[in-house]
Length: 272
Ligand code: ADP
Image (cartoon, rainbow, N blue to C red; front, top):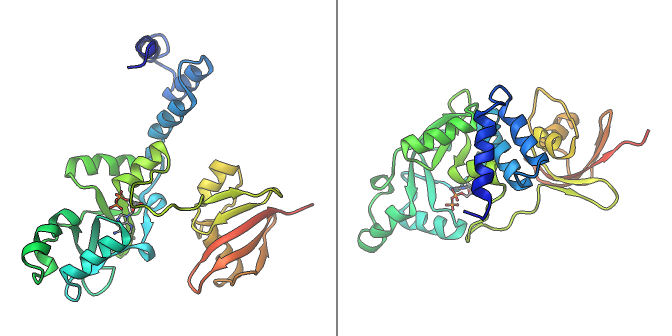
């Protein structure tokens, strides 16, 4: 423990269980920062932990379009090994026929011995049971379930039982400590970048909630969750690169898009 941090801890404990036991924990944490008892990054982590239950699986998942997964009949051990090597992911969800019917998860560690002795075995022999969760499950509960069920990857289901995406332990921890990159992660550009002219370069998959939390920009929609989805909704279709749209407050320029979604866009305040 750092020098002096023990006494800091005691002060905190006294504060929490002492005279301020009626005050909300958030308030006590913010007060401790004001008094210099906690560093900014410590405050951020503590607040993130307290707010975990406000986030849902759907907000932190990797969407189904981005999943690296295998088909149980057609893909071989070798195919899965190639997926692991090329993607850098150590767990591969396995589906039957299409991604809406997930039937298992393959772990790289389970695959290795088979690659040495029985490459022709079916991948169903080494699959573990998938763990499913509804898209609305709150992130605090996901963390407890991962701990109790001893799993680190869950399949997120939509309300009709189809696959929405996956959440792993890393996705949950990132909600507490911020972005984590391991040795195999391809560096991802920042989802929200502030440009010199005061506009914002934003990934289409950025959640409207994150825009509000990070930039104070409030875009309200009960139809969509991401800024890319919002612009598609404004356009009534998936727009192409270079197209521009406005609502009451902002102008959106599509910077990168394919036939299915908007990948990047710029957002500017409208001059009044
Ligand atoms: P790994 O190191 O095997 O990629 P992590 O749990 O550290 O697994 O996850 C890192 C990130 O990669 C997380 O955002 C997670 O959701 C994502 N991820 C993990 N496995 C897959 C997969 N098979 N397909 C797509 N994304 C994945």
